[in-house]
Image (cartoon, rainbow, N blue to C red; front, side, top):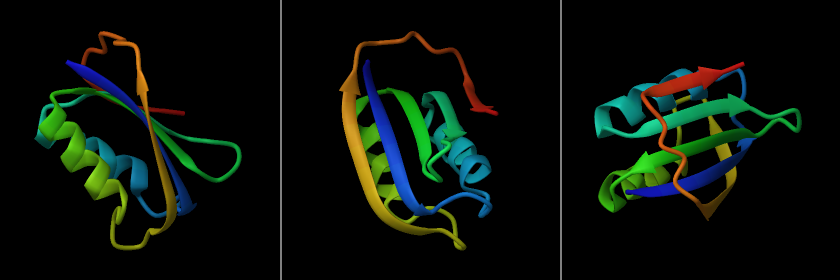
Length: 89
């Protein structure tokens, strides 16, 4: 089990990024959360196997159709033992 923090910058708020990310995470069997940051970016913490996290990171480089991703940063985290995947307000 691996945990990663993913910060996505660009035009990523108001484009269904969080809802799309949740659907993708659930499809990949990932646990964690996604939320909007005050600075206009989206923050995600995901937990799962290497392959699923890799797929999620690759998806984040593009995001949903209306998103325009300019930067993505990925950092390892200590395991959080998340249950399910949620959108945080």
